[in-house]
Image 1 (cartoon, rainbow, N blue to C red):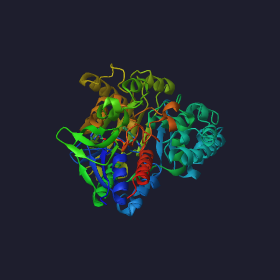
Image 2 (spheres, helix red, strand yellow; image 1 turned 180 degrees about the vertical axis):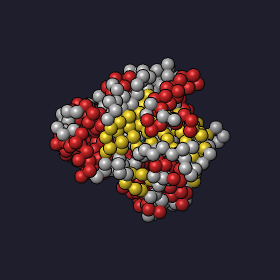
Image 3 (cartoon, helix red, strand yellow; image 1 turned 30 degrees about the horizontal axis):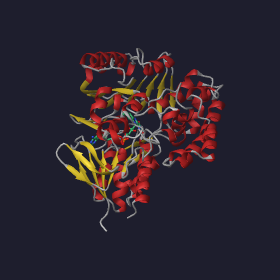
Image 4 (cartoon, rainbow, N blue to C red; image 1 turned 120 degrees about the vertical axis):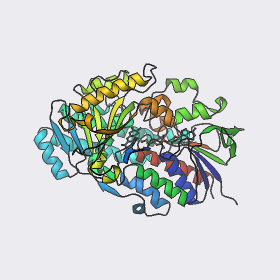
Length: 496
Ligand SMILES: Cc1cc2nc3c(=O)[nH]c(=O)nc-3n(C[C@H](O)[C@H](O)[C@H](O)COP(=O)(O)OP(=O)(O)OC[C@H]3O[C@@H](n4cnc5c(N)ncnc54)[C@H](O)[C@@H]3O)c2cc1C
């Protein structure tokens, strides 16, 4: 019997990972990608010898990255080389104080005892509490999908939901353990990595800071884009077909069964279609209205979307010794976060700096530096966030002025060799993200776990979804889990 033919729409992390998993098991997989390069949000820019990671920069849970290669029969070390970062971050507070977070617990305890003597014990209690909840979340919510009603409505699920105690906000849950406002910010900020406010998001998302502190932040040699290239290489080695610069214009459906995809040039016939393009935009643009089930235009209008990101990528003709990851907190942290979802453009934003050339000279010409400045900003649902040239230039100028207020970077404007900008509009147009929401559907309680779109979200046979806006959610390790969930369903339902 001929192997089943599978089309995957999108060569983002989840699309490539699904491709590798299924092709390595013997299916015949073709990936269609609209852009000229793979990676999706894990994209890459190159200019005059400077290499920029466009989206993700922080590697957590390295074993999840490696599992993909092992699963396909390869040695992960032949594809990605990882190193543990120490320090994890340098954090700078509005009052001029700073904190270096070490990945070494002995060093970190000394730092915490000296900076927050009253909170060191509370910090450990917080870690123990969230670690326990993480173990439940991992086993019961992240590792599998909720495909049938009986997967959702059962006593165990209800019990586990209560054991997760996820109803509080992240900030309130942290505040029970530590008193210092600075330490609270340090542990709460990370919910923005999935585009939800720590003052609103379910408290379970404080697992992000726990994962960083207990399992470390890692760096992949060559930057994050090395992972995208490694996945592309493995997919092709296993015999998969990759069609870049090939946007899909619709999924072909008849009698409630998907049977292929259409580009503007031709139709392609397949047995199964997996959609990695972000769920809200993919359903709205690629699926005929009558097949959208409960995901109607009205439903998407009522759903909530994550925040977005304004990023400046600088290639500098001078070295600026700093750390790989830095966070600079706004003077009024709470107002800054409220602005993001009000939505208002923050006046005094918190921001994140990434300088991989501190430890990886391969990303810039000799003696030069790469600096990435990410400012969380509202998504584009409100039409005033058009991000036309004037708005973009004004915000760029403002953030560059803010950068020069930092002593290390005071002469930075004189040393810019190349610069690029991504606005919410760029994210929307380049990767088809609804409202330019960089982390897809916002993971509020009612859009998480069984409430998030699942792999089999539409009432159409042979059609599946994977990626950020479906369960389990945003972040590279999490979308790699989504790829595993969808691949396991296909392996079970369409055995070879
Ligand atoms: C600024 C930023 C910073 C981040 N930082 C981190 C981080 O530090 N660590 C971390 O773990 N995660 C981080 N994330 C989250 C992480 O990058 C994403 O969750 C993940 O990359 C998304 O992968 P995906 O497969 O879901 O989707 P995508 O990467 O969006 O892939 C979908 C693909 O589908 C393609 N596509 C869309 N429409 C079509 C069509 N019609 N036809 C063909 N192809 C189509 C798109 O071009 C894209 O390549 C960050 C994200 C952003 C944006």
